[in-house]
Length: 347
Image (tube, rainbow, N blue to C red; front, side):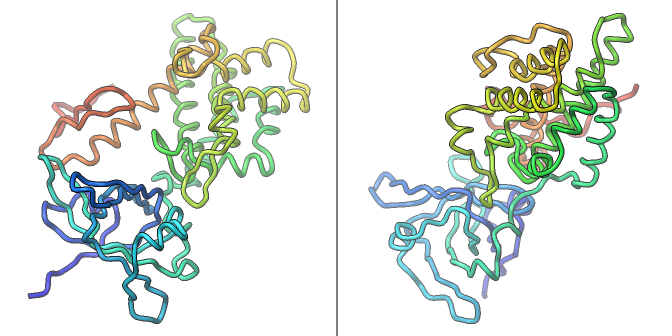
């Protein structure tokens, strides 16, 4: 009997049972050649579609095909094709199986099909924010409207034209968090909304905090990422992002734009301080520590959004009934998925 092979998205692959086979089309993020304990080659393959990313193994016994439109698949030598052309950023067809290895789920790709890139454009398979762009833009504009006067006008200047268009599209990272189309916009909106709530709450309790400048700082805290990351078609870090990093890039861009706009005085100093200090610690890449209520709030909101994103990603892969995630390297912990929740959250 012929085995039924289900066409799956990456989110569906994550939910397959042990031993289930699948097929699908994806874009290659990265492929790395390695050797097993018997000195046979295999590949670590990272692929993406609109629903997420997954890493799998392509073992030495996998079969590779060239599959041009309107023709039969032609078996090819994997070493020759990868060495000559590379696969990063290309759309491929894959067959594989969800298995368990050393007690942990693993994806094995058993066949790889090189597809016609014009008929299967890679950008069609690149992961996007789960939040619709229109909703993110609406929330961004609502936050921008909280900032009046020269600061509000400066924000309009910062996010105008091609610069604003780039900000709305680029990822917030290439791996750690929000590494997809509209990722920077999603992360920025989340940070600014949390910062607004924290600033308003503390102001109402008597803290001398400028709520509007807190929100403005949150909206531009990652400004340097528009020069640090690109989509090609998957998220990639630029040369400048690699060797200069987004914090100094962001401060330099902010300074140029402030000069062009004519932003001066304490407002300029505070917004620049928020950009430089938003990672919260020098060992995390900030050259200065947050030293004002506004900067402390933005740094806390940025860290919170990062960690909550990591929690969502870690627990989304857990099998039903499993509560503890694998060890998460970026945050140095395991995450807890409480399911079902012990009680409803009440205000």
